[in-house]
Amino acid sequence: MSQPLVSIIIPTYNRAHLISETLHSIRLQTYSNWECIIVDDGSTDNSEDVIAEFCVQDNRFHFFKRPQNQPKGANTCRNLGLAYSKGDYINWFDSDDVMMDRFLEQKINAFLQQPDTDVVSAGFVKYNPEGNVTSRPYNTQLQNNPLTEYANRHLSLNTPTFLYKRTVLNGMDFDEKLTRAQDLDFTFRIIAKPGLKMFYVNEVLFKVLIHNDSITGKFTAKTSLDHLQSELKVRKHIAFFYINSEQKLTKYIFDNYLKTLKKILENRQFLFCGKEIWQLPKIGWLAKVKLTAITVLYAVTGKGIMTFSKTINAIKVD
Image 1 (cartoon, rainbow, N blue to C red):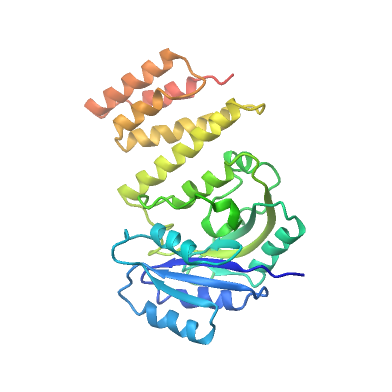
Image 2 (cartoon, rainbow, N blue to C red; image 1 turned 135 degrees about the horizontal axis):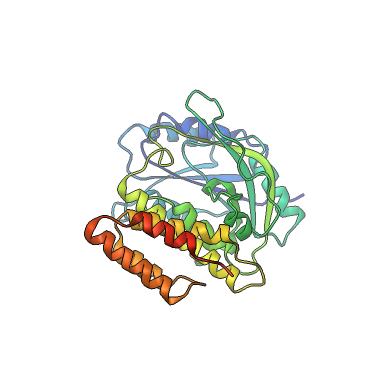
């Protein structure tokens, strides 16, 4: 059986104390035809020395630095890694996560068994620095359309989850302006493509480390807003997908959309919130007027969030 080349792309920044475990887990993969592209975002610790040792020991590891004239950030490094890569299949990974030894083998087998597949998904768990699993398994009970699975909060759009056929990535890149939720934004744009075929490997194939220095483990005002705006964009797309297809737009899906809009308002993004209100699907102009009036009230007085909640809870879905 052929072994196509898989490109593993890892952005990193000051992870000298963590990335060894990540790279070691890659080196132990049962599937051997891979390259690992590591792109450093300007580390000030000894990350380069740690990574260089892996490169010397195994020529499948390749180290690059983000050029200083490129925007700083993991998204730029992910895009650069794709440009440097040569594989027929692409799997972004994070510099503090760990692969199970059959992570690549089981994903590639899915492609080889079903050649028309575009993306393969795998399950994962979260764990802490002491090595203890701290979460339920994610992405291990999937069977429906990925949009439906995500809308019902069964599919987590975690970056390392997905192995992509390179051709499905044509014209795609990570939004280099986002500080958080770039995986949600990027992955959703792919799974929303008409006719996309996804295969689910409903097994835990990697572990996500949650620690104080992880983006997953901390929020700032900027990252929080980035996350909410990405989530709102995704949920609006889902709502329109259901409205314009034969599938039913449920109250559950629509409520999640509206509640995300409420969180945007709580972040005092009034103009953005007002624009989104007038693009709301499936509600009448009177409800839009009420929501807009409450938005103005909250902008002026800081009051009205409870009324906003009551208004959106009263909205009916056909």
